[in-house]
Image (cartoon, rainbow, N blue to C red; front, side, top):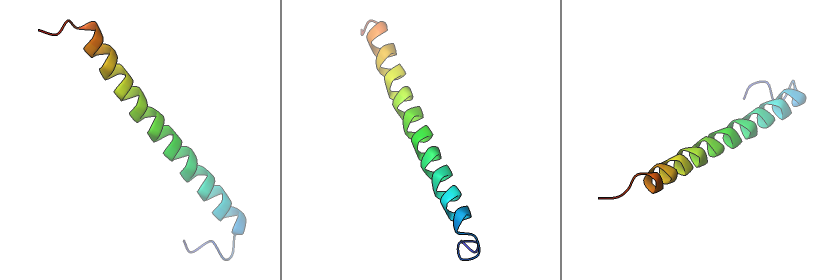
Length: 46
């Protein structure tokens, strides 16, 4: 990042957003797995 030296608070904001994005991505992945499991359980396996 170019801004990190001039704007240390920008770096903090960037890291915060990065963490939030990662958390969202992880929970989405978890939801996808969960719904897949639910579908598997709901649908009788033949």
